Image (cartoon, rainbow, N blue to C red; front, side, top):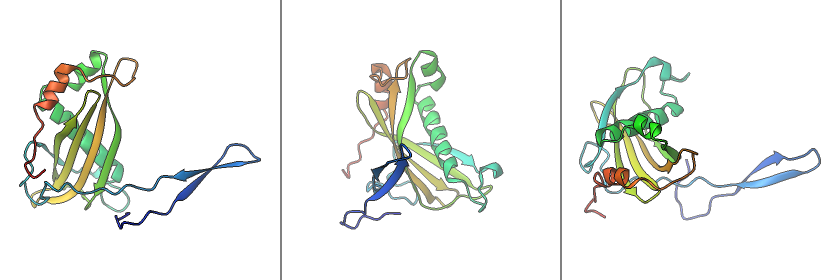
Amino acid sequence: MFQATGMAAPVMHLVFPSSWRRLHILPLRSAKTFKPLACLELRGSKGMSGFHEIELKVRDYELDQFGVVNNAVYANYCQHGRHEFMDSIGINCNEVYRSGGALAIPELTIKFLAPLRSGCRFVVKTRISGISVVRIYFEQFIFNLPNQEPILEAKGTAVWLDNKYRPALVPSQVRSYFANTLTIDPAF
């Protein structure tokens, strides 16, 4: 992983052949560092107000060849947590789709802290951290149970889409559901 050191990261290049005669060289953007949220104490539930929680258990088919949960599976855990969160505040994802809208996740940043293994019980904690007329920002955490060991930190952005899958304004009623869940931490 990259660490913030105050120095610029080296530029890496990707080479894509566009024809047999010449190559295009494009700079690869360096990875942005993921800073843990200062308002949270990652052991236990202090500072975890406003989070929706869902408890899950690792299944054997989610493991990779090293006996730990495959990294791609964590995005599924986060998606499940977001859906359950939305259901808990009165937004049914199936109804959103049937009404012609959709929510897309164009950005999801995940920081892996520790692995989960077969049979582990864990909790996915989800909350909205901000909202605009077109975007919904959320934070998610996964903790191993029963010891509350931090497993994952995630930040993401959701965008409302119209029936042609183009970005659209979040309907005011839906925006109010999300706005009612926002918690302002006095530490900020």
